[in-house]
Image (cartoon, rainbow, N blue to C red; front, side, top):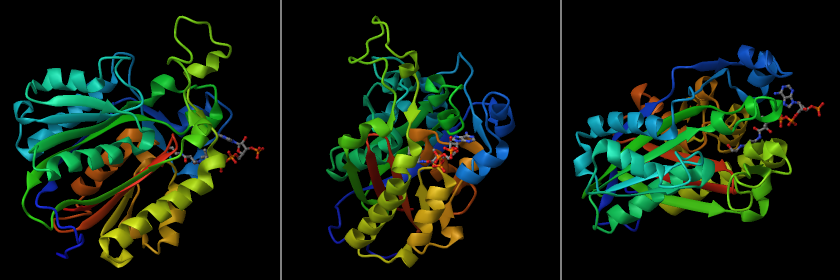
Amino acid sequence: MNKEVDGRCAAYRAVIAGTGSFTPKKILTNEDLSKMVDTSDKWITVRTGIKRRHITEDNETTAYLAIEAAKIALAEAGLSGKDLEIIIVATITPEMVFPSTASFVQKELKAKKAFVFDLAAACSGFIYSIAIAQQFIESGRYENCLIIGAETLSKITNYKDRTSCILFGDGAGAVVLERAKDGNKGVLYSTMGSDGEVWKALNCQAYGSRYPARKKLDDPNKIYMEIHGREVYQQAVRKIVTTVQKCLKECDIEIDDIAMLVSHQMNARIIESAAKRLKLPDEKVFVNIQEYGNTSAASVPIAFDDCRKQGKIKKGDLVILVAFGAGLTWGANVVQL
Ligand code: UT7
């Protein structure tokens, strides 16, 4: 399809020039977890769709995963680090407190020309990053941007808490956006939203300025992710549906125009029930949660890369990337390949 989907018709577009993803070799299966906590493969599969997740070794860090994913995306784009003008790393498990994870990516890629920063919007971080890069590129001021979603959630997972440890995995996904004059191709529209009132539903409270590392914690579990999944389950479904509907309305397109919905992989049941409400058939909804679990900011770019590399989307296709997560945050990008 080659339809003009955005009435605003930007002079420049941010076009997908390459994608890549990288996950650690070590695998943690549902069977492994059922030996660690009171759970079962059946419970995890039925409730979430997850079968296994990739987990870092102690010496594997967020920047390492980010760099490996970035190299693949750059190679596909035919660019090298020295060409890059912007690097954004979306993460909630950064390399260290500071400098940013993006600084380590810049160093390794020898991207001396770029300005770089991290973005913390949890599971929506990659969507937010695309939206921000889109502004820089559409303004005409910048020619390209490397965006990476990278997480080592296993490092803040409590493997004694069955309500959270079954959900999360590690990995990284990357996209290179390049400026183009083709009005119909690229990131056509982005939308973002947040609700800080509900911050407690999904959180990891230490270590930050509220609970600094030098002060003894009242509850040692504050160093781990805490998730009140049931509280946000319905909201996750609703937000995905309303966010996608907003994309359709703002771009003046129908659900049938969408070739693929690439959602944040937080729970296969949430994705399926959102898709059902949107009247999207199964073959237009990409799901790879069975392999990776929930990798927060890395989830959408890993899914997008897998979806492309499996040949499920092709040039000219209209794709919606959508996410919902801690903050709360949510958002979507409408992309024409
Ligand atoms: O990426 C950020 C966005 N993430 C989300 O939005 C997550 C949204 N929420 C979810 O995906 C789901 O709520 C979960 C997968 C987290 C949980 O599934 P659920 O169907 O909402 O289960 P629940 O929390 O209501 O728990 C049902 C039962 C409880 O037992 P009782 O109280 O009914 O006796 C839990 O204690 O399942 C129990 N349970 C488990 N049982 C076996 C909780 N975790 C486990 C477990 N294995 N791992």
